Every structure is written in structure tokens, then in C-alpha cells.
Image: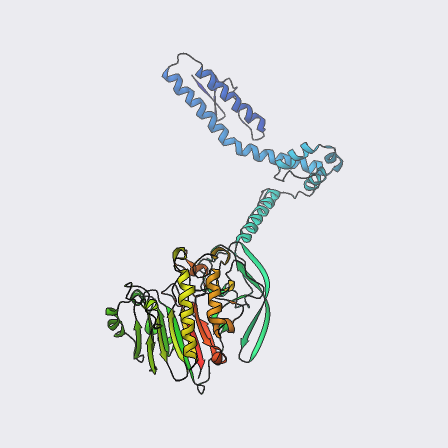
Length: 516
């Protein structure tokens, strides 16, 4: 097989194609014919019964040459075709009647050739062609460039819609210090009224609240400042301790500061590099610290007591003896109490190390860890028929001589505002109807005040977040930890607060400042 060279363009002679030079004005139809003839050529070769190795090699060269030709000229042909279309349009634009005489199909074909979207009615297509800009100075198709820009803008808009909705920067109770990685899905905006107490002034503001329904809030610096609740009600606001705590008391007002914390294993907590008990004591400057779920054995207590920070010389510990490494409570104080008592005085309730009671001059302080109803609610009956009534009666007996403060993990989210997903936890330990009614009847209805809820009636705040689903990062939590006080001293509570920024446990510490 021989190959004919013509004007530096190689064309196979045996392909049945006459030797000629492709000019830039060749139409797209010529390309299609070339492709068709090339396919016929391959078919003719493949139909031979016998052919030599050299014939096969020449055949491959023939096909390669055709591919090279098509590749080199395809782009230039399209450009030339678009250029010719512009010339044609420029001629037609001077005669609008000619445009209107064309069919819709012809108009759409023409618009496609110059990069205009071929959509709309005949009137729209004519209008688009009439308003077609000239080619830019750089020779690029201005219409096509405009379309490209519009496409990018639309893409940017779509991306922008996918970004999280940012809150009003002045609404500090809604969002604080949002990071670049924040992701909030399935948002629901609503106007709510928030009331804040600042000194002696009460201010009411209406802000745009963000209700996070189900998805995650990722890498937020202070996730608790976002109103995370499945079914938020009008007026609910997220609790932000940086903005919603009253100013400190003056030094001439005597007071005591209490802290309570379910540490979920004291040994493990003290080993954490991210936690420093000394720093917590220095930062909060508390007088009394109540601990729950220490999980210590009696043989561990002396070793732990030796590591306590200076100034807190009075500490009282009780451990579970029925199940080792389980439950356990303690109270650490820098004020020496008048007396101390462990448990309720009822053997059936006192084997798990759940209560420590200290007597001070003006009140009794009870550090307690209420039994969890457990998996399958196996201890629910015990909890609501035995433990809760016994604890309530014990408190009322103490109250005959002095007001009572009960603090700790009470293992009950009392109201729907106290849990992220109330509907999904109706039969979960800590939120059953039975537990909530027991909490109401045995404590609140008997004259003990939920100090945090009294101070913040509309604040969504949690003290417990499960480890399993990264609850802290998404602020999907429960309020299980309380300071309950006798009605007689409720007005002396200066502040009842939560410290959600203190990590190291699945619970956060809670605090109470009581004026003496």
C-alpha cells in the first residue's frame, strides 16, 4: 500500500479518498463523511480472508493518519463554523423580518451554534439573537463567555445555599464564635423572645433563633450556645453562661459557692492530661465540691485524699460495697461541717454509696446520686416506689430543723425543655412519665425548688451528653443534674448555673451561689 502526500497532509490512497488539502472552511458535515468513509475502509479490510502482515501494518497507519487529521482540524472547523454563524447573524440582525420568518427549530439551531441557550418561545429566541453582543477584542465569543459566567454564578448560588445560616451577631444567646467548619443541616428559623436579667434590669429582645433538628453541629467552639432541640417552643433560648449569669456579689455580702459534678470515674478523670482539678478549683473558687459516680473502692479513698489541693481539708467519701467500682459519692469542703451522715439510714438503699449529708450552720447539704432505672427499665419500680419516696421523706425530716439543699445527678429530665429529643425518649430511663411524675410529686410538689429552672425558665441547657453519638459536639443532651433547695431559702440563691465548657466526663459541673 502506498501513501500519497499532498500539501503536508497525509491521506490514505486505498481509503478511496481523493488527495486534497483540508481548508479551515470545511463544514462539520465533511467531518462526518470522513468518519463514515473511515468506518467503511475498516470494514473492507476486515472482510478480507487473507492479508499479509505488511498490509495490516499499512492499514493501521492509514487509520492513525485519519485520526491525526480529524484531531488537528476538528477544533478549527468548529471555530470557523461559529465564526461563520456570527457573520450570518450579523447579516440577519439587520433584517428582523427574516428572523421571524425562520421556524423555531431553525432558530434553536442557530442559537446553539453561537452558545446561546436554545430555550423559550420563538419570540424569546429572536430576542436573544437580536441582543447578541459582538465578539470581544480578544476574539472570544462574548455570548459564550457570558453564559459561562452565569453558569458559575448559578453554581456559586447553589453552593451558598448549602452553607449554614449565620445568626445575628448581636444575638449572643444564639451563636457564639462560629468556626469555618460549622455544619448545620435541616434548619428551622423562628422569632422568639428572650428575657435576660442584667443586674436589676430586665431586658426583653426578639431575635432569630436557630433550631437544630437532627443533624450535627461540627467543630463549633461553644455548641451549647446553639438552641439544639427537636421541638423548640416559642420563647426558648439556649443557655450561655458567659452572658446569662448575674454579676458577682460584692465582697461585703456573705455567701457560699457549691459545685456538683458526676465525674463518671474519678481515677480516670484525674489521669486526663486535659483536666486539672487544681485549675478548676482556682477558676471557680468554690467552697464545697460534691462528686457523684466516683467509682472508687474504700481502699482507694486515702490515696485520693492525699492528692487533694490545699485548703480543702474536709472530705467525706462513701463507696459501693454491693458492687465494687460502681456508683460512689463524695463531698470535699474547705468549711468544716457540724456533722456528717452517710446514706438514708435504710440498709436496702445504702449499699451503693449514693448519699452524703453535711450539716452547716444554716442548712443541710446532701450530695446524691439517684439510681438509674437501667436498661429495659429494670429498676424503674424500685426507683419510683422506694428510692424517691424514701429520699423525699428524709429531706422533709431534715427540713424540720434546717433548710435543705439536694444536689447531684438525679437521673431525671423533668420537662421536655430538659432533653434534646423528648419524643424519642418516652421510654428511656430518665425521661419516662413515671420518673418525671415521681420527681414532681416527691420533690417539687413538696416544696423543693429547681433553682436553675427558677432562674432560667426558658433556657435550653443540658448537663449530660452521651459518649456514643458525640453528644457534646452536637449539643444533643439531657439536664439530669440539679440543685434543689427548700422554698425558705430559694430567694437567697444568687446564681444557679452550668459549666458546659468543663470536659472530662459525660456530665458537666453545675454550680450554686447562696447568700448567707
